[in-house]
Length: 243
Image 1 (cartoon, rainbow, N blue to C red):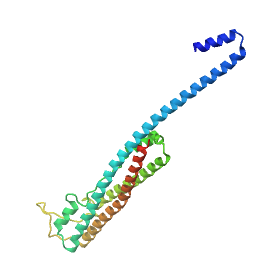
Image 2 (image 1 turned 180 degrees about the vertical axis):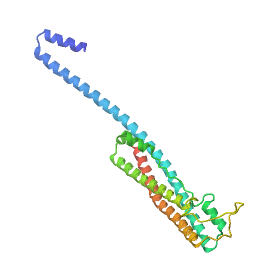
Image 3 (image 1 turned 90 degrees about the vertical axis):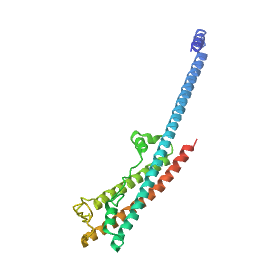
Image 4 (image 1 turned 45 degrees about the vertical axis):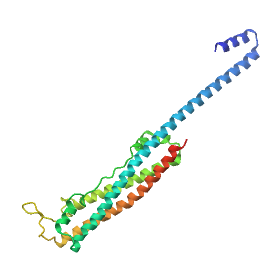
């Protein structure tokens, strides 16, 4: 600036107005170019920060989905085992299972009333959605795919946990309209000599069958979610590996 000021003063003192004006215009252009370069540099730095943040968010989303995949697989194993248990309990109606074995399958360890709460692993997605961080994801198609995936995940969560409430109603000991009328003697032993009434047998048959159907429905929905999760993980892998 000292050099520029000295040149301006010399030109004015020598009466070279035309040269002074040309010099002033050149100086203005130089300042504008400097400002533009500074703005471009700031924009580049901001873009680099955004890309770094995007990569971190994508990695966190992938980590959530890997956890979600484990949750889905565990839920599918559970519902598959419940189908086998329901099929096994049906042996009671063909005379191949006693009342005591049946009671254990209904109310014993890992019984037909046992269910798992399905939890959506979507912490990163929710944070991005609530803070506007989704805009940091540069690929608009990837943003759309993430939105659609989590809409499907919400549906899967709703289906499984609605099924859980129905299971509670089917096999709760306090649901008088659904639970079969087992009884125990004064020593707490199951009274195997007491036959179930026809109404109890009908209600029991329908409860076991409905339990099986609920697990079948869950498996269909979970299989679709498993496939969608694996595809989304692959999609995120590609996005993260991009330079």
